[in-house]
Image (cartoon, rainbow, N blue to C red; front, side, top):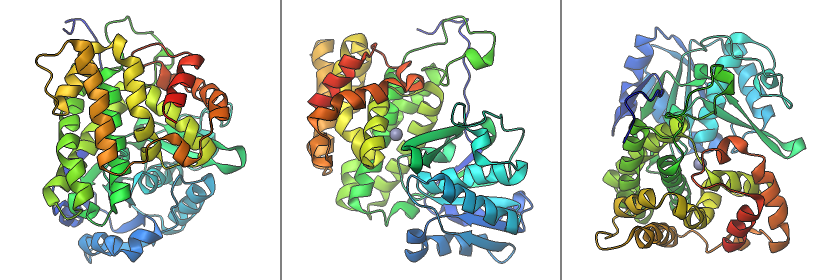
Length: 410
Ligand SMILES: [Zn+2]
């Protein structure tokens, strides 16, 4: 199935410590890095919920610990700048990001800009930013996720909102991989059912989009690394991560939403989020993410919720170009497909995702989030700009196809 001469790469966070109670390893991990001054980057809600004190207590008396709790969701550039200013005052030798994707993103970029200086927009791609490469390693960073979905704990990418331009931009650099992803499912126990559902559906979409994305490893690679796609396409390794993540979501998401204290379900979701994050960071995403980023750009809708509403119709559109893959997804989701033809099995995958969405309380369509039929054209235009996501989609997507998908998802 994979040609012997294909060339592929695989990257992830420096190391991973996973399991219930893993947060107790923090003092030892700080010690390994000779850290005496730590900056925790997080949001106020987690301070109030007692999650941050759980983390600072486990750092122990050996470190002086400062907390920056000014992270907001979809953090605008001003939040990054405030965190960077704080890091310049504290001059930490370890930064610990505690929270969902937003806090971990702010921690990753703070660690780079605090070390190398300059303005944050210098590191954003042109035409918005200066396009400077990050020159070298950052302040050592540990990512401690308190949600299960974004995969930010093991990705090199951060997303920055520019509210005055209605835009989101990214910084991607291998120097932004956290040195350690410390994943303790017990820290997700207080996540409310709605956020558990949104982030879980996001993790599922990462796994499914990575599993069906195109392969690039069999093509000759452009000599210049800058000419290569952002993502490497699926490989035999990303496939294994994606498959396991899909099975874990099928087993864990309904249970984690119904009973937040179901530790086994929480563990499955934290593991699924991590594995799916590693899979998509390497393989890439597709049409669901392109359409969802466009919708969220206009309507400020939560990422995972928007994703959940688009995923089934993108799967239906893509199925003819990747029937066998979607048939496997159906089976990983627990559907019986042994006696079905591939097209029937692929349809079962979309139906299973739709049913899971319904069961965990996702609304019935984008219209409920305020998306109107008359803006479908604009949303499709904006999604078409996201070339780095569309290039991996298994079936070619034109503007009219995106319009059809968006209309069917209303
Ligand atoms: Zn996502």
